[in-house]
Amino acid sequence: MCKPIGLLTLQGDYQKHQQAFADLGRETFGVRRPGELESVSCLVIPGGESTTLTRLVDRVGLREPVREFACDHPVLGTCAGLIMLANRLEDERKGHFGVEPLGLLDCTVLRNGYGRQIDSFTAPVGLESLDGSHEPFPAVFIRAPRITRTGPEVEIIAEYEGEPVAVRRGTLLGLTFHPELTNDLRIHKAFLEMVDRV
Ligand code: GLN
Image (cartoon, rainbow, N blue to C red; front, side, top):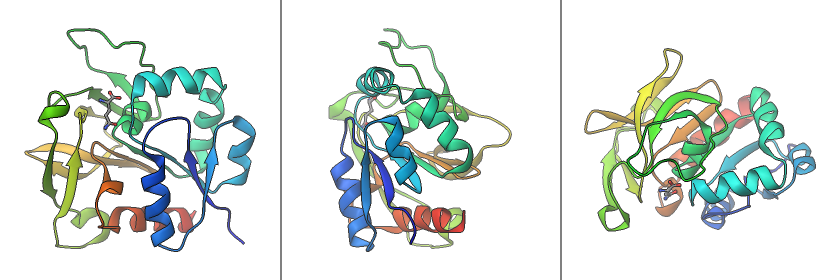
């Protein structure tokens, strides 16, 4: 019996991910402390606030355990979750507010790169390189980060206005948008395929 999908349930909109996986017939398990990583097949780091995520990850001692887990388990990071996966933050006018990414994906991100909450938007993005589908995906960007640099080993999976919005290296998948906020389950499905292949 394969292990459930791990969801980092420290902060953010993890319940929507739980629902998306449930709709695909898959069980999730909330991860809040290091030992719980042993019970899961992969980890989803949801959107929320990377400042709070940083603080909580360090408070419960998950930083090194998640970094080790990611060496041989798939990890999906969405929005703030992608910020946590990145290895560098772009300089911001106001500083980084204590955000300390995990440094797993070789890319640089600019937090709130499209502006404030009021500047949130939905846009169609192509997913051909993820699942071969030709139907655009309705990507919801909420105070989304921008990926301003990707390392040579990082594959760009989807772009919006010529910039990467979905990137992958091995079994690490990072998205600047929120796939759990639409009824389109293609990204969760593609991630499950990555998990089942490991
Ligand atoms: N702007 C948030 C951050 O910097 C991310 C927003 C989100 O996850 N929707 O952490």
